[in-house]
Image 1 (cartoon, rainbow, N blue to C red):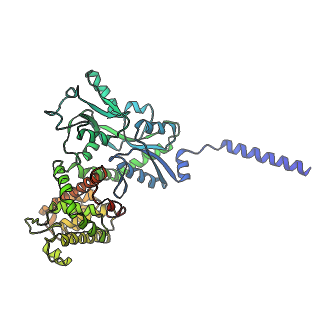
Image 2: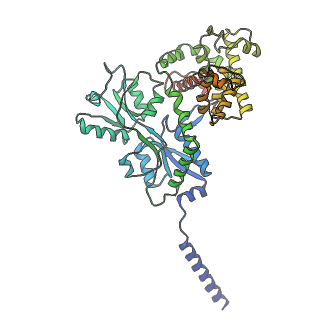
Image 3: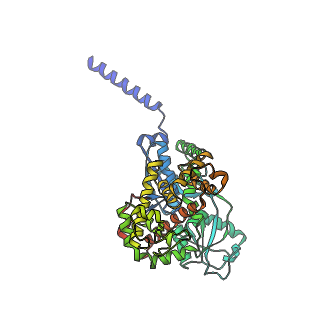
Length: 474
């Protein structure tokens, strides 16, 4: 009897558990992500999305992904795929939580996936090499008969198909083995005549190849967005919508886009050829000095080299109209403080400049509490205009209701130090405030170009030092 009663009780418990489990709804994707503590994202390797930079992973998509993970309180597992169709397929099948790959929102893609709210807008541009055409192409018909290569499964192909309706003779080749940067490089090296690229990619890449030219926009503004599965479970998608709403409301989205693109858009492309010529011919003479000075001050040697180029074009005898001298253009007062006897002595100048930059970085961190990359941009501005004027600019930034801890906000205010209306409110008064803005943006581009040069099959300059400062200044 006791055994029979126990069996009956056990059966009832099993039945109750079955009923309870059957009535419990399955967990949503958002709940599963939070429970596992990990977000699985697929992206592609490109300067505008995700890439391994000198200081680790970088790119606008990477920053957005990391911020979304922080928003959810989870880690990120990033998978990289070069084939756009593979990226879309992984989202369709649900093997990835979503795709953050600089994807253009198109009607054709909407049939396969669900797009988030847009975070950026671009135009598609036809790009050619200035030496491949006698005159600038101004109509799409000017490309008929020329070799056009584009990325397979891209929105560029969709756009070309639309253009072909009006221009039946238009033809192109689609590649599965190259990314958009490689196609731009092929145009630069005259391996193909024309490619189609998004305007944000062109902005970044033209700094490396000034011979590239934009013939025309071939599309209206198009949205970039994240891609989610179109299934019934839209929990993670809705949370991403809330996330982007938050980023826009706080201004963080605008800040991120400016951080990644504004300095490149202001760069004078024509100076790239001169810079790369000096990288090949002048830089090797001073390479070891930059390395040693950077190592002694826990800096990235390429950053020190970029600062020196902006200051003197790597000319140890350079003299400015204000009287600063040498490779790092140190003032008499700064040289005296650093114990430098001869500002035109290359070793002393580079060593002094590196020490001074380290001092500025440490001071910015101590006084303002800033972390990277803002800390370096503020330190560079201070190197140029002085710490006092930078502090004044931060005060005015706060006065105007902007964020004094963001370089993108402070650089908009710095030029106001020229205007009496504003500098009379400050402690240190008048300053040529537009100069540190141009100064910082130029150094950022020189630094980026040098990294690109080192990473793209050119003669390696001090390859051992590339890995030496993986977690340093930038």
